[in-house]
Length: 166
Image (tube, rainbow, N blue to C red; front, side):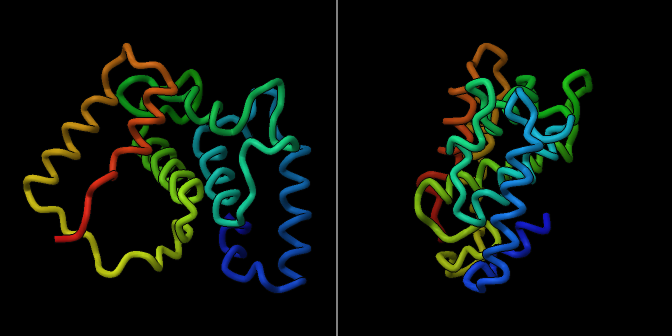
């Protein structure tokens, strides 16, 4: 979370040095399954920090046994939401943090301002009923247990495609 907070100041040489050291340490501490710690939320926070600081989650220092932090996050998905731990049940906080880390990744991949910056947003989103129904139906697709992880990630990334302010 500190690396997320520092992202706003990454133009400073001192901050740049500190964040480089922080990401180096994270790379060293990354698990063999691509994750960080033993919870979905830990990995979600790292992915968000990477996106906020312009660090590619799939760059060589962050690939362990052909696994990335994204692979780890998606491993917590049950078909109904994300679990806090591999042996746990669906957890609201884990689901929220996994979701916003995936939104951060989508924004990063699209070259948009960071999750906490969002200078491209001109006003708060107000979802009319029709758009809310579309989003609800799209989310409902995520809960189908037969979907592959890649399909789930694609659905989450596409969830807000075409949603605009009205």
